[in-house]
Length: 174
Image (cartoon, rainbow, N blue to C red; front, side, top):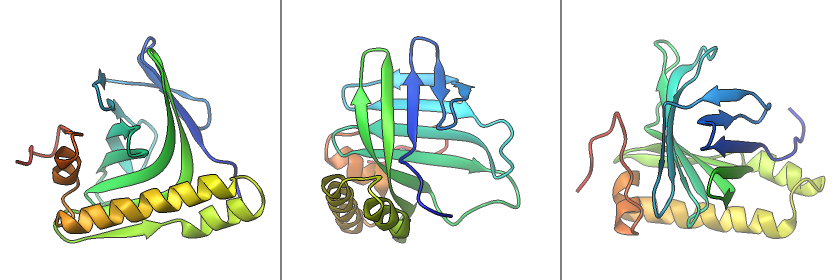
């Protein structure tokens, strides 16, 4: 695929849109701003793999947690997809910068770290600083460790550290 710059995404609360990395405005059904993060839910028109997504952007842990609603025939063995990100949180505008590393979480079973090759290639060619790469790796290690301690139950782990999340498709954990 070749090295690519980190993907940036904007979340414009005043216009109720998510501006994707390609600069396309995506209408958002719901933004919910909390003390610990930003929730969004929106359709994903034109995507053959999935038709809807819900995400929590959590600045204190540098993660974006997403539940993709896959279309038949495109299902993946995951309950949540986690992007390691940097977050700029404003009153009406939030911006995330993807730091390449991702995690596929399978509740009560496992977690898989993805895209280490992209992180290394981007760092090697100077698209990501060594400090940002180190930070992304350390956040990933902390997340994997925390998920293991909490039986790979991501909402339960997040709630245990004061970051409760609610989802349209996932029942609350207690």
